[in-house]
Amino acid sequence: MRNIGLYIFAVIVLAITWSGVKTLQTNYELQKQISTLKQQNEVLKLQNDNTALQNQYYQTNQYLELAARQDFGLAAPGEKVLLVPKDVAMKYVDQKLSSQSFSKNTADDRSRYAKNFQAWRDFLLGRKVARD
Image 1 (cartoon, rainbow, N blue to C red):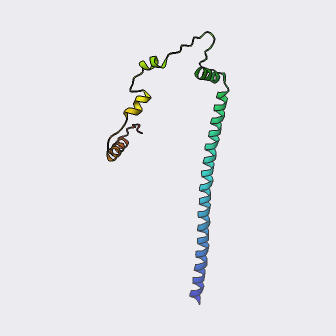
Image 2: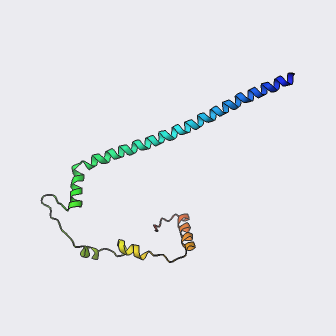
Image 3: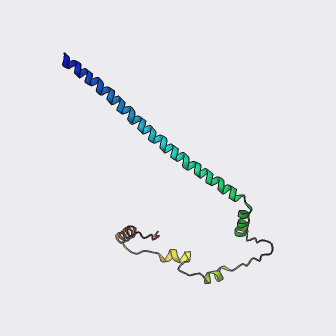
């Protein structure tokens, strides 16, 4: 009889302990969710602040002047606008840097394994090579 009472008491203690552990685990999971949501909220707040600053910049005279120069080819009073034909301008540009020749000259005839090996080697050696 005494042993049965001890077994019942042990089962009750284990049930209470299990319930406490489950409550702690649930609270921990909820705290993780709260901290994640707070971090996301801070990121969104910073993005909103950044957008507000960009909007303020877009309303300044400096931006309007730069946009007018770039988009419409306008100049400030007293300045002269020089229009240079594209063929003349491209004569002084290095052909290796030209976007048309760069995209055509980068055709890679190596096997897939060789490209993969090269990519891993560049990654492990810390090289930053831009490849398509």
